[in-house]
Image (cartoon, rainbow, N blue to C red; front, side):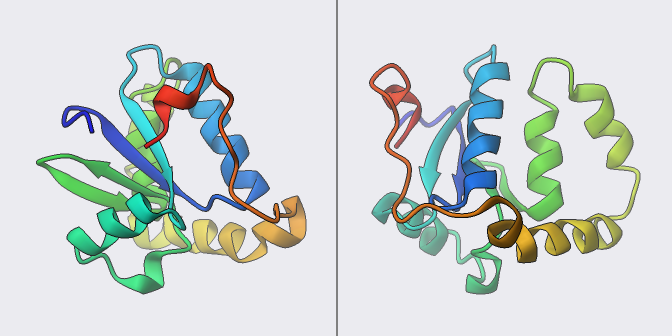
Length: 134
């Protein structure tokens, strides 16, 4: 695994989450991110190694190797800081306390399957995107 890459852990069966991964990949011009489903063996291992609370497993998690990990809206905004065209909006939204941002995040997370549906199994990346996944 490349130690310099930030790792995005996501719900591999969630259509909204898979769409977010595709969105990130298209805008990751600096090739900053790698991806793994939370349900995968590597996803479970990365969560366990960092003692991340299991109650946050329904959240997107961003692991910045050697620095920290971020969950929920903090993870989304940290990701946004690295994407073309989203650095400014991420910086502005970080002025809102995470407790307030996470109320919105949790509402969307609770309803994501109802609104966007889910797959029977985790997404399998295409051959050209395979190198982006752990």
